Image (cartoon, rainbow, N blue to C red; front, side, top):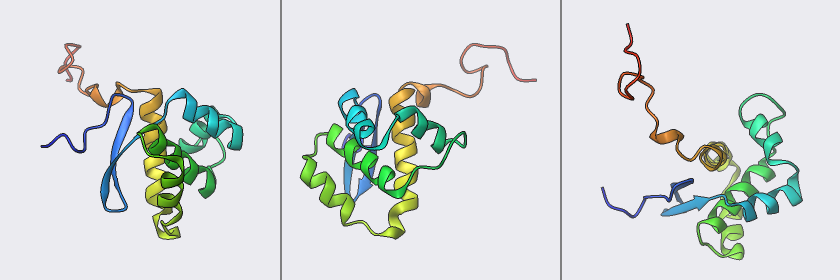
Length: 124
């Protein structure tokens, strides 16, 4: 596997508009999101069934901000997301929920689900 799709800790690598893209939410992008859409923790709750589901606009803005965090210019990120149609919204929803998850729990994907593999008690 090449390094082209490797994301930094706390980020994602996704293919968008036919190219691999790095997305990452840093505090600056989270604060920009909150200025426009409200609290990031309410969004977290909405993604995971403990609150109102986020709007398509909020999802699209979060993904665009993730692209900005990954190094893309604001206008380019806005254009890329704007060029995606309504048929892309479910995929963007999945990307956005993963993006916020990896931002809050950057080491979760490295954890094992089998305690025996992590040196814990074995499954019976």
